Amino acid sequence: MKLIVFCLFTIYCCSLVKASYPMERKKLQEVLRELKMLKQLMMNTPPKDIEDCCCLTALTCFRETLLQHFGISGKYQKKLYKSLNHTLTISGLNFCNTETSTTNCSTCHSHPKEKASEFFNRLESLVQRVRCVDMKLRSAGR
Image 1: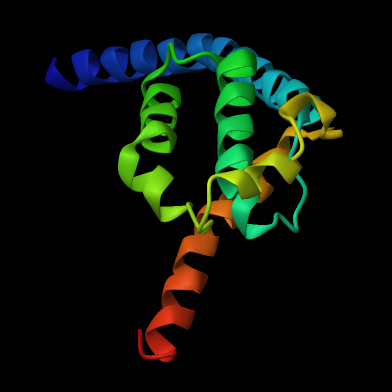
Image 2: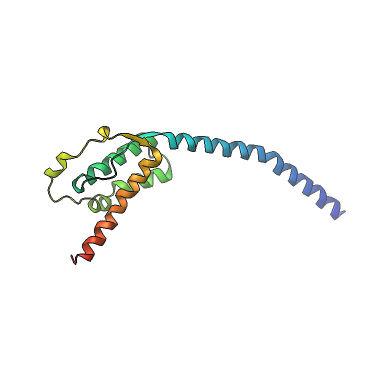
């Protein structure tokens, strides 16, 4: 009797798995389509070679573009936006000695539009620039 109940339960479970599989597959295909669309999204992207005094302007451009295209409704978007807006991030990217030097920096809307993947690569390299400068200062004995 136990064996029959176990077999029937196994058959029932298998039928549930098979029934949910097409729905899961459909949902995963939807996610892939959305990712593909996001990868194609064109966003104003500061250049790779940002001058030291323009890092804060570039950071502002990245923040505004993120807010414009993605908002801050999701947990990770909100966390990223808040981190980019944090005073430690801003002070870490402030390589400029004078306030007047930022007048030569390009506005966000003047930057060319690049695909989202390039946008995030450049944002990542801007943030990593802090470590490079910090390492150079330490090796110079400052």
